[in-house]
Image (tube, rainbow, N blue to C red; front, side, top):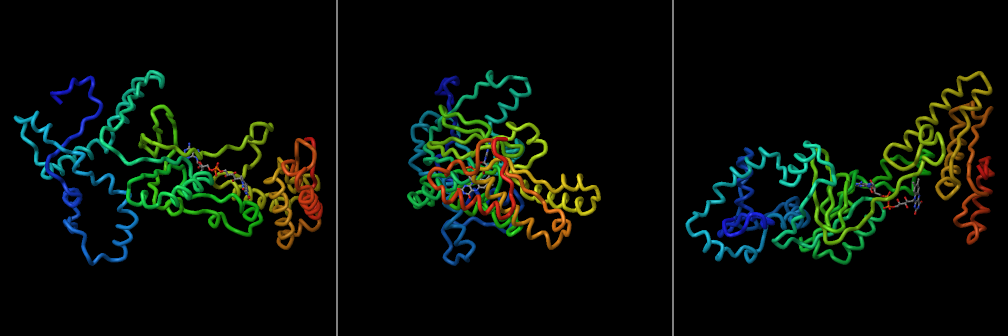
Length: 380
Ligand SMILES: Cc1cc2nc3c(=O)[nH]c(=O)nc-3n(C[C@H](O)[C@H](O)[C@H](O)COP(=O)(O)OP(=O)(O)OC[C@H]3O[C@@H](n4cnc5c(N)ncnc54)[C@H](O)[C@@H]3O)c2cc1C
């Protein structure tokens, strides 16, 4: 530190000339945490059980870049030459102290503390000068994938098939950031509406399908393409992740502001719990209609409007009409006063996207909708 003018200091690495093995590190930490039955061993045991084998095969490579650094990165000869009169601390002996210090600070990094202080002072975002520090020490090439939807999943699959060895050895690090810990398959929403499959069956755990990547559940709040980093809010924590390559897979949002009242009274089909919410409301309406003696009020309870006659709207109309047929066995009111599904579209007809190229398919879909008495309202 003495040799470097402090203003130019970009990063301070605490360097020890003797190696600290990960065994020593883990042993010191586990003792500090009161785990008295944990002991670090210098060599890989030969009698690993199945769980340990899986750990070393799958989890180990993800953590190894954090725990192990090549000795060549830390040749301290010149440094020690400069600091002859400063005794070198016994790092292993001081590890518990270091852990206590970090725990006292809630493991908060300098950057996030600095931002918190600036926020408290009322500094606006533009005043906040976040200095991006490029690491002096080599870090593995890092690919950050934001979002856990289709784009992200297929991008990861492709990367994994090409770079499996480098990813598993930690040479390339892949970090996946998403807001939920499952990936939802939208292709079965029709079947969910029709009650044929449950929401649970359309979900795949993110940590399973992105196996080999480091998964972080959090919301991406900012992407800085110049500094090549992203800011993630994960509960109370704020993380800054640096990347060499970024895969952008944050998807899109349904525009329900275009039709007045839609946001308040309608259901979208994207997002957690929306399909179940719609199903619950549908059943509530059928219960109410079963008890309603006023024919006009009953009619209102049995009208269902779908906005948009593209792929999703047409699929939902057919699924819903089929479901209502099935529900006739349970709600006699549907026999005497059938529910009416309306499919509304701003333009003419249905499935505009494929009308010119696949006219036969469009005719087939129209016939199917007619069979179920779905009323298509064009130009509304
Ligand atoms: C009801 C329905 C049925 C469909 N059926 C079909 C079909 O049969 N066939 C077909 O090909 N397509 C279908 N689609 C379309 C298909 O789902 C989309 O084209 C596809 O989801 C787009 O993929 P994506 O990765 O861009 O976005 P998404 O799959 O929406 O993924 C976006 C991801 O980003 C995450 N995210 C968003 N913002 C943030 C943030 N700030 N921080 C962290 N994470 C964030 C989300 O949680 C999500 O995981 C359907 C869509 C719907 C709604």
